[in-house]
Length: 147
Image (cartoon, rainbow, N blue to C red; front, side, top):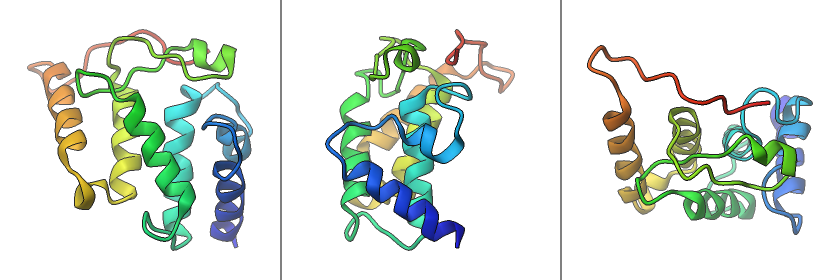
């Protein structure tokens, strides 16, 4: 039942004319308060669609989500979404990779089967995460990515 509801919400959202964003409101009812809305929401939408049996090949919303995420990947290989995305309700690039945003985007792409289509964006993202990791294995505290 839950996966059918998730599929319905995600399909209706991603088949609309707008870009990703409101999905956080649909899935968590906490728009922009848990993490930055676009990378976070896209990851959960893709995960929900995959849990409902959808794939990249049979789901336009998953293909649209992958296209969206890949279009936001920075030249560093990572993703960095500004907290202003929540305020503006439009994706705002922070111009600096963020561990959390990069992880969310990687998870969404992995769930969607990006490795089978073209693993290079994921390799670049993994390299960015490795480069951000401290010698202790931890990641540095970065700027707040939520309001």
